[in-house]
Image (cartoon, rainbow, N blue to C red; front, side, top):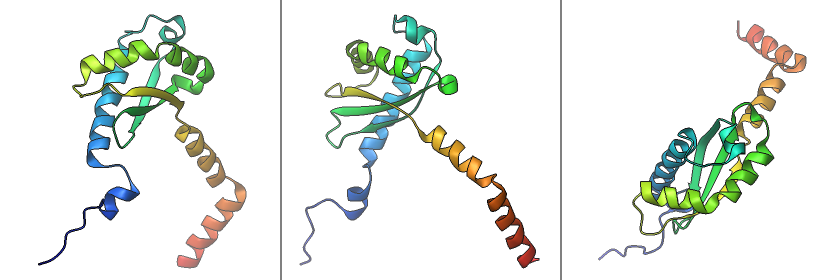
Amino acid sequence: MPRHSRGKSSSSASGASQRQLRVGELIRHAMADILAQGGVHDDTLAGHIITVPEVRMSPDLKLATVYVMPLGGHDTEAVLAALAHNKKFLRGEVAHRVNLKFAPELRFRVDERFDEAERIEKLLRTPAVQRDLNSDSDDNA
């Protein structure tokens, strides 16, 4: 009779589980709705449009790392401070909107993917890269 491994499969060990991804997406939608509707009575948050591109969940689903970016990328530190100040209220709102056994603790981080994409875009536009790209296309022709 074949033995079945009781450990985690190799696919889930390398990345987030399906459940983590699903709960993260539910919390992302809830956070985006709360921030878009102006549910938080904070002058800093009211003065910014904030996107929530991603929420990463811990394996036990008790910690949610919420990645945020104010539109235009301005005042990120002030927005993070305002979100941290209103963390308890936001956690309660998320708990009302997402049906989980425990409301996860919220941790806020700036989403730096936009900056990284811009940096790569600038690199691709440099003359050296353009020269290499043009020489590759000339070689293939």
